Image 1 (cartoon, rainbow, N blue to C red):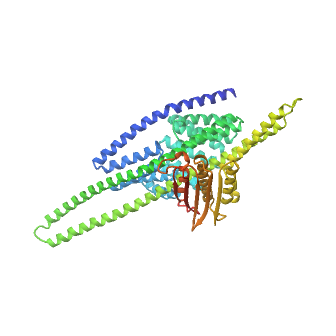
Image 2: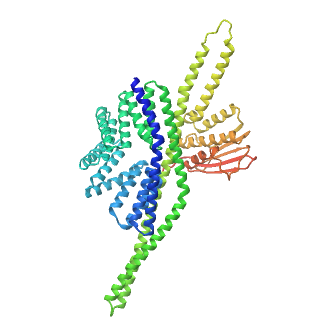
Image 3: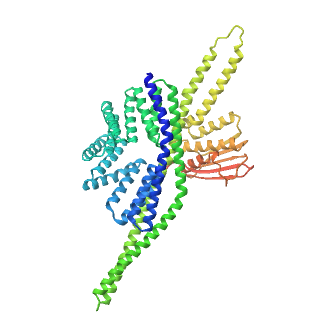
Length: 597
């Protein structure tokens, strides 16, 4: 036991040291790579090298995906690369970009669209005899079937991938195959086979000298040890995996390892380490959510400039292409004139007109195809944005529910137990403990009340049990009980049953506005109104607080959370506020969510 603990402590210090050293090295390398890609892109643009532009945008897409973790920008660059490969009619490049687009669809849970694309690509690469890419496609199809719990189809894809891998020598692809195979045997609870494969995976990743692959193999073996109740072995595997994953910022695999380590230490009743990894898990999850928000904001602010530049580039390319077509036509016209010299001027006229009409028709068809492609790309980008926003909001609610349960079940129960023990303390002969014990029990009662209040704020039980109106009534009553301002709540024609996501979103919006009015505006009177207007729910909140200048940014007042909720509910918001004259919110949201994914 002492040796194992020393090993664990050593791995922790080693992982912390790696976390301070490796990211700077990776950032320096990525900056050099990014500058080289931009230089190649500018050179290709000046030389009107469409093949070079296609390759440069592809490399930019990989950079955005792997280094900056910006899937939307990566998808945009892949779309541009695909357009240029179509211009030069590079079939191999087109199929390669389609594969990476399908892979990103899987990462964004767009499984149906990705599946259709991968099935077509599988036929193409099978005919071309490309075993490596065929194996990669079968592994991607396995991921889709695995997520859909289609065990039969998943086994078929896994077997096909194994057959292709046997034909080539690619250790990295073989490790990816082993990791997916471990996931399958873990699913069917064949833990002995999964353990054998995990050991092979670790050995092969060691020879390959790949830190990320070795980390994934170690995490897989740690998970099997955990299921076999070998918690010390699981901790050793997870800690070693963690030391290799620290070099990758905002890594979701590291998030899973934190969660498993917390569970393993909890199973050993080592609650100190379990709590430490729960905190690391929560911190990393918050960092990932925050990074996603920053990426989303950055993408939106740059989108207009990017589209402007894209439009200018397209116009230049169209001019070059039109000039090229015109030159080709003139050459053909000269040949016709030489051949037909000496007569048939009328025939030459009809030939020239025919070619002009043909070019115009081709241009119109190409323009229509470009418009269709742009519409498809915009639809896919909208799906990615909706997925990202839904994942962020769902993640927040899940984390709120977890924290509320932990507070209620763990801390609340602990405080109640402490109170019982204090009540049962023996008094001395003089009875001097009476006042101190009463003061202590009063403080414990206050703490229990605070825990209950925080738990209710994080996860309103009245919302799921009774509905929106009783939940808001409960919220208003709690504010008034806590010595808050006078709050008047009015509602008209609000349905008792509605979409749970809509109800939760409206509850959070009202809760955030009330918090602003009490904490920031220092209001003494607040009016909250809910009423139906056609198929919309209108939220109207007024207060007599200090107000604020709406032209300035008030990020600390939770405006970002309110706007995110309103956008998710496909609604609109108007704010009327002036300093020392109070604030009025008028919000319209749909009474149901029409899902587009």
